[in-house]
Structures are given as C-alpha cells and as structure tokens.
Image 1: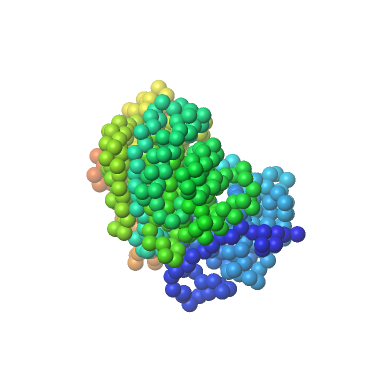
Image 2 (image 1 turned 90 degrees about the vertical axis):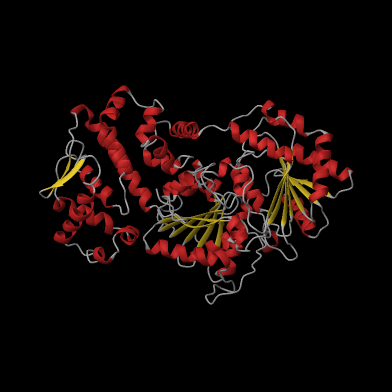
Length: 621
C-alpha cells in the first residue's frame, strides 16, 4: 500500500507568470519551463540522447521534468531523498493525471507503473536493478544531477539504456564537480542561473551583508573537504561569537530566517542562545523525526518562529517561499552547497520584496571565491575582483575588515599555472592514471582551454609539469610544432579535424601517408550526416545542404576546396595539397609513431567534441 496524500511532504510551487495556450492536465508550463522545453525539443530533434538542464532553485525543475515526460511511454525518476520522490510524484500527477505512478524504495517496490520514482540507494543494488531490463525505460530523469558522478548513480546509468537521459540541477558547479557534464556528453540544453532569473524578475532580489568573522581558520585542521569539526566547535561554541551573530541578525533581519550551521551542536547552541535572548527559534537536523520538521516549517511560514537553525536539511528538496532572511554562520566549504542554500531564500512569495543574506566571512577556504557567484559580469577577471557586480535590483555590502581580508586572500591565490597543475593532479588521482585530453575537458575542474592558452597544447602542459616519460619528452621536442598546429589551427567548421580523423583511422603506421579527397569522402560525409546536430552545425549552409545525399564527386570537391586547401595556408609547410594529394610534410621516426599518433588523435577528438558540444551559453573551445 502506498502512502496516503496526508503522509506526503508539502512542496509549494509559487507560479507568477501568465498562462500559455498548451496545457498539461490543469497545469501549464511557465517562465523558464517554456524556454527549457523548447530547447529540449530542439536537442531531441538534433538526435542527442542525453541532456542537462541547469535551472535555479525556485523555477520549477520538477514540473519541467513532468512536462517533458509526457512524450515518453515509461519513465524512471531517480532521486536521493525520499521527500523528493513523493514531491515529484505529486507534480507528475498534477500534470498527467491519467497515468499511473509508483514508488520504488526501501518500503515500496512498484515496477509496473508508467512512471516510477526510485530511490538511488535502493535501485543501485544489484538485486533491484536487475528486476528491470536495460531498455525498460524510454526516459530516465535524474534529479539533483550534481550527485550523478557518485558510484551508485554510475551503476544505474551504466546499466540502463533509455531513449533519453535528462539531468536536472540548480548547481552543476564546475569548481566542485565537473563530472556531471561528462555524463551528459557536455550537452547543456538549457541554463538559467539565479542571477539571470533575478534580472528577469522570476526570483526575488537579494541584499547581501558580508559580516567580518575574526576567527582564525588557518589554525583549524583542514581534512581535504572540510574543517575538523571538534576544532571548529571549540571556536564556535562561545557566547561572544553567538552574541555577535545575534547582533548582526537583529540589525539586518526581516521576518523569517533560516540559519545554516556547520554541525548539529552548533545549531543547538545557537538556537538555545537566541531563545534565551527572547527569540523564537528551533534547531532542525537529519537526526530528528519528520513530524517535528514539518511542524517547524509550518510555524516558520506562519510567522510563529523567527529562525530555524539547520545543518543539512534545506540544501535540496525543501522550499519555504516566505523565507526572507538567510543567516550563514559556517565556513563555506562547498560552492555547490552555498549556491543551493542561497536558493532557499530567493523564491517569490506574496509580500516578499527581497531576501536578506547575512554571511559571516573569515579567512576560511573559498571565502574570496564564493562572492563570484553573485557576479553578473563573469570573466577571467572575476576571481581577481573584491566586490562583484550584482544585478541592478540587488545590493552587496561588505564590512571594511572583510574588504581588506578579501584583498589579502586574492593576492595570495595561486597563479593560474599552479591552479591548472593542481586541478590536473586531482583528476589524475581520481582516475588512477593520466587523463586524456577529452577527459581533462569533461572531468577536470579547470576550463580545458586554459591549458592551451598557457602552454600552447595539452602535451606542452604535460611537458612543463614533468608528466612525460623520457621517450615522450623526446617525441614532444621533435614534433612540438605539429602538435601546436593541430591544437591551434583555426576552425570555423569541423572539416579540418574530420579530415585528420579520417587519416588517423588508417592506423598508427599509415595515417601520415598522402591521401586523396576521394579516399576521405565516405568517412567525411558519414561523420557529418550521421547525427542531426552535426549536420545542423556544420553541414547546413547553401552548398553543403545539397550534399546530404551522398555524391562522391561533390563531397570530394568540398574536401579539396575547404580543409585540404585551407590547411595548406600559414602553417610553415607542415601540410600541403598538391596534384590532388594532401600531405603531412615531415617524417616520423618509427619509434615515435605510436606516441605521436596517440597525441594527434587525442587532440582531434577533443577539438571535435568541443566544437560540437552544445552549451546553453553557446561557448566554444
């Protein structure tokens, strides 16, 4: 027996935009949902099989998933929190009341319904996943997709072969976890962050106050992803600290506050201190029962509580639109978590004009980086700025001591080359081997183009980082000009790299031999027409459209005119096109063939992937 409606957590959905003509049940897509659905339709037309949608908290990601799911017969919705499963099921029922829905978790095992809402913890177990055939589902939706790089998710995603995979998240944050892009092959169908949503009046503006925290975090042991809890608590559980927090809150608060703490003991301590000063607060955390949690949320919404102090409950899956004040009394250890927590206060609600954010800033890790999340002018210079440029409807106020602290922290930050090296070494450690160029692009924390900008090529970086063997160092020295040429040759279309890939397909010992356009033509045409997105991006102008149906003579002429002739210009004679033959004009020593072939192929595959990679901001590499 499934839970009754009264047992389910409540998920308010505040929708303010006007209706449109197409409806789903009694619910209509609104705001960003309309735009995202249009982009998802395009991505399916272009024959992508995976997509990621990045939408700020409060814009209705779950309803978006429900609208999208209407075109699929059998759907699997995966989440890691029980309350998300039930909230999602209710959203889908509102959109498509005529379908049947089931829960698959530790308690219920419905495997027959049209749409199944499954706990990742249950589904990822071998005994449960094998109850389904790999092609059981037409659509798989993964909620809070930034978790999808975890081993449990990977087991599930490796097992199933759906017609389409949709990931939804508010925080793919590439600084915290870029693996999520790789899972969707880099295809971000739609992106709208909270700053853009604020500018479009789809989320509430904020007033940010950076309050100086004199705690010396450099004296606290860093454990790789967080500070040592006992050492941190020794400094946090002091009345003078609580008094300062209370004073800052009383000076800037509005009516309903969530206070984000680093531990249960800190949440309990601050709640007790605030209550002794006449405030109405509670401490909520994951070790408490659901009943007390729901009651506290209802009281906060009704104005019967001033503050809920929490640790880990309100990062995902729970929204309280009337919340108009956020109090951060913890060091920011994860930019992803910080972004999620900020989103808790930005939902629109009747009578809510803005959200106040009160943030204690000390010399903890990421203190100088996290303010870039509020910057509307993101660029290479963002991380060097002290005060970000916020949306026009917002305010950002920093204590003078905070400004001085951030200046000092920014001055001490590692130069870009050192950061690139650290990020590379972290990925290498994760993989247990040296990453390929494409893996660096998809899974690395740093933008892959920065390696090319700083070192001319990925192999150039590996040489600088002393990551090459003695044999590889010799190969790099002999063929550096060629590797830089493949990395940097201009590419308005993909044709040069498709030509090179056709040559590489001939094998380690044959790829550098002279080749004719007719030899390249079959692969060239097949590569550019086998998917709609390649055809749309690079094979849809007036002349190439005529070649959608294979014509060897015409395709060969295009290859001669475009990549073979154009690559012959301005590359110091590394290639040539004479008498109908395209040549690479240097010899390769027999002992160098395998290494140079591997590096050349890595660059070609990376550049082709980056060229076609469909990003919501249309960025190119």
